[in-house]
Image (tube, rainbow over all chains, first blue to last red; front, top):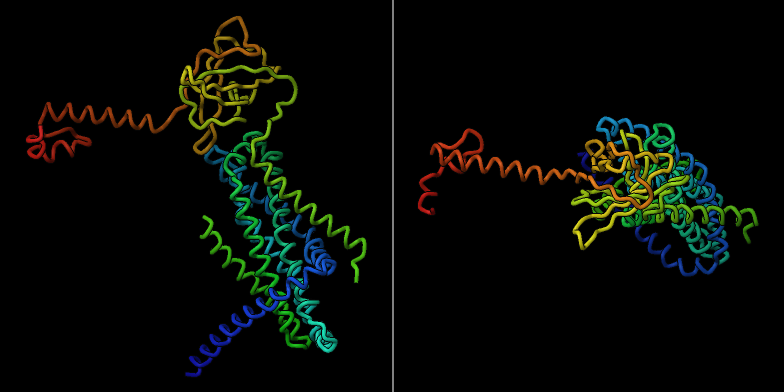
Length: 255
Length: 183
């Protein structure tokens, strides 16, 4: 009985959290028109979440592409169709690997920074002080970070994809001497604009999800050192799980 | 609080890089002129069927890539596909009576044009036409022909012996009473 009650409590807790996140999302959305009026705050957040994630995104994109080139070549050369490497690599990166791995890295690099920063603001009573000064922390702190994250992740995704395709090319064409023109022409004839749009849409959706989780966790963190740490951890875990679930749904929709 | 110049600069760099990546992705899917590098000359050939040959496909001799397919058009007078190939000038000793055939590389690979040299003393030059061509191998056509052959043999054998042939004679042999009234 005890076990059942605990399960029920957990379930209720989960449903309540989903509701709280949704309401928080609505409150942030309501502040967006006001936040856009102060672009300098948003620029600063695009810098924090985007520009500072650039190095990790580019490095990982390059290596994901190169690994794809290695194992893709090894697989395809068994069928004597190494030229399909361009198609296979580009489609895999544009549609799945690019958006998903970018979002996971973004959650690890930028999401945690957001959550711990906002959580520390909460723990050091900065958010309360703002409220005392009649400054809405949602407008001043949360909304710019939210918009910054949504702008940053699609751009990071595009950079990841471009570098990833370069990585495939590096291994396939430079190392294994796959015919360069066939590589590119087969890639061009099979990757369509709709595939790129799919990548962008995924980037935007993951951007909304990951940033929302990060600012929510930070905003509602227990104002202690332990609470901030826990909020940061939960940001990464929830963002990663949510990204993969959303990826399945989006792929099913846009297939 | 105004962001400092360095913040603005790195943010701008990041945004520009993002859009450059997007631009690269959008433009690289459209067909771009393939640089053959160095001098080249153009020859053409007319095919009944080019299968899934694409511009940019390789033109090879003995497995060595000597050029590229430049454009593929359709001639409404001849009802044939016109394939223009750009061949690197260093390969200027291809006999005029060479044979161009469309081949497939590997199981999933793309199609390319293979040139088998002929025996003529004259060589192909700019604007020439390759007379001897062999069309793309279309698997469906072959299967159709095969099926037609089998069917013909079936109908032939069921007339010879009313028990039907050994392979695929089911339709003929199972219901001979049902078919006879129709005829």
